[in-house]
View (cartoon, rainbow, N blue to C red):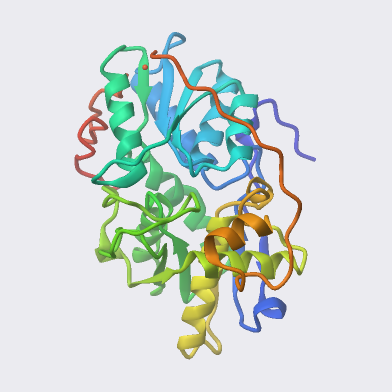
Length: 358
């Protein structure tokens, strides 16, 4: 029996789905959505908040501030509610409605950026807003998930060791690339492991993370419109790019077998399936990381009209669930402070700084 008093202390770390019967290929899917935040972002959110507390930059009068396309915002909203902090999430119009409503239910303020930057898309526009807000009021503490080493350290310390314990014969690991925190934490850990593990990053077509051409991306989560500061490509063996239409097909394929996963998971599964089909994967032990579950994608990935309107009539062979009701997120009034430069050298104002080993 598990008994907890704070929501961020619970996370199911050892649940895997054997996709052999669904994909026809041997692939184990590590399910990271079984916690009160609903995604893998709980771990880096907890790591970053606790580090800021230890540095003394978080006080009872502080306002947590972060740019997020969704899952990190929910995780920080949950932690802020539990610890008594105010929280402002800066997101954009691609954020799922249900995700915004969850953040607001947790007491967070949500500001939605509606226009992309000419150079850097919605992410650049969000970061510009955060920087401007931070300059107005020193109560704001910007954790900066894009540059904060606590992002990747959480996975170095927790996610990767959990996989290693369950799969001591691991050959290949598929990790989605967003901020690249999960990717870098796992890649750094397995680089030092007792046997070689091939690290395959899975990215979205339209993302510039691995030098691709910037393009339209409608699904939040994976992919970046600016180069992620945390990324060190020397730890990555190769990258696979997945079209969003293939992400949606993968999600629906899994849902038809009873597994409702989120868009990021659909991308990772689609990329892993394609990689395994192109390689001699017989006998390989392969694991893919599923960052989230699917309930927050009901009005997008699992809504037939939304899917067919963006990706064409042939994406889905059958209709999806009914439309979830509409709503709007509240804009946040000016109130916000970036973290002071910590001893490890990261700087949320510039997005730069070195990344120290754990």
